[in-house]
Image 1: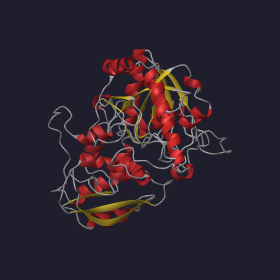
Image 2 (image 1 turned 120 degrees about the horizontal axis):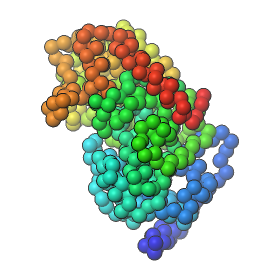
Image 3 (image 1 turned 30 degrees about the vertical axis):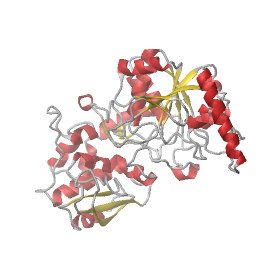
Image 4 (image 1 turned 60 degrees about the vertical axis):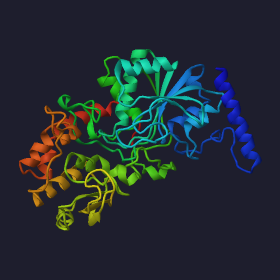
Amino acid sequence: MSHFLSRRGMLSAAAVAAAGTGLSVPAHAHDRRPRPGELRTGVQVLMDDDYRLVRGQKVGIVTNPTGILPDLRHVVDVMAADDRVDLVAVFGPEHGFRGTAQAGGSEGFYVDEQTGLPVYDTYLQSGQALADIFTRSGVDTVMFDIQDAGARFYTYIWTLFDSMQAAATAGKRFVVLDRPNPIIGRRAYGPIMTPEFATFVGREAIAQAHGMTVGELARLFNGEFLDQPAELRVVELRGWKRDMAYEDGGLPWVMPSPNMPTVDTAFVYAGTGMFEGTNLSEGRGTTRPFELVGAPYVDHRWADALGDLRLPGAGFRPAYFTPTFSKHANQLCGGVQLYVTDRAAFDPVRTGVAMIVTVKRLYPDDFAWRYDTSDPARPYWIDKLTGSTQVRTDIDAGKDADAVEAGWAGPLKAFARTREKYLIYRR
């Protein structure tokens, strides 16, 4: 403990020095009486309560650059300098704690220069291996504070799942510091994951756009999927409603990953993320990933055909772009830019399916599904993203978006009933 007390002393001294230069760095800037109806994230609620939930515990936190307060300070930097909580470890997911790694990468183990805290790499770690990391860190309680993007194949929710499972194995308490789902979460959308296609982009049977906060998902995981439930506490949001736009909550948007730059990206990602399972660029390597979609063989006809569909809440314009990396790097691509014109009416998954159906019909000799030669039993990446063969085989059979959607309607309705039991926030 002497190391951490010394470190906190140094951080306090730095704050005093900053104050002497005219910079304002109050010791507890978050310590103020919340205004009635003001949105407070889980970590703010924990701080408002003087960390009483974890008092006397050695605490570690699974987080990344999105773990911020409204004043843009990171919760790890704040907690590390706060004697009211004993933060002893940080656990970094995909892209790393400080966000230095691209997709499919992490930062490895290191000591954080800003706080002196050990940072453990948990990316692709699960089961006993992850439980051993929690044990080695010396924590009593594992906290989770990451901004999700609302899609099943956005991997942070499976980091949550694996961390809960490992915490239960290691005998550690687990606390979720809740944050809003940026997609207006009135209901769930899309197909349900099936066990045969479970991977790190979808471990369990939830909808492609689940419409839940990470706190609600943690309750669902604990109640439905974990053989050994975690000792779970969710620090709930205050002042948040399911139909609240993310921007209305006063929270800055921090990129949860390098290709999720805006709230607009999150709104379309659960649908256009499916293009990762095709030979079209999903816009990686551009400034508008997942909103720009195209390929060298696409022309203006795709945008024209999509406009004719009059998809609810969606608009399209012809677009031309040259990705700097990933698929079709340094090649001119024709395609579309997708605009969400009415968030409440927009269905990201049906829109994504309609886009695939249309581009495949227009360019049958050029369109192709992305083939994974390393997994001959499940070679089509689209099946892993959508959770089964249904979407791909229906599209290959020539079905339109309505017919493809009908194929997942029954399982989605069953999931919606299960989901209802674990919702915390109501309209």
